[in-house]
Length: 92
Image (cartoon, rainbow, N blue to C red; front, side, top):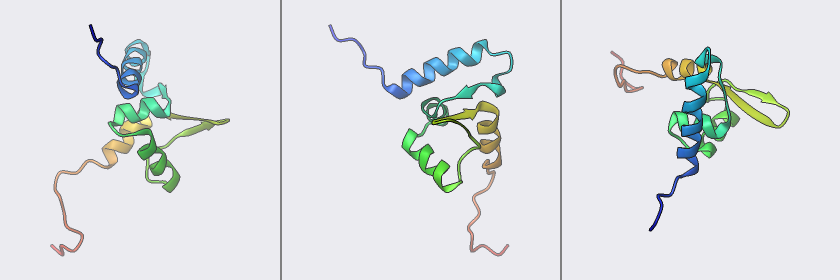
């Protein structure tokens, strides 16, 4: 009998949900790159590229470790929320 395979991203998401449910203030929860990528629905590599070129959410560096605050990720997502797709060449 085969057991279902759990992807690393799914595992990171499950652990993050557990931590968020126990946090006094979920916005202050620090996420690893794997957890932040799972939360955003992207790969760790894609998040690393955004971090490198400055287009990603704010992050903290503690020694060699990168951490993201959930509140910073939510703010970054809110800044990118669009209600209308506007062409850059549209002059209206």
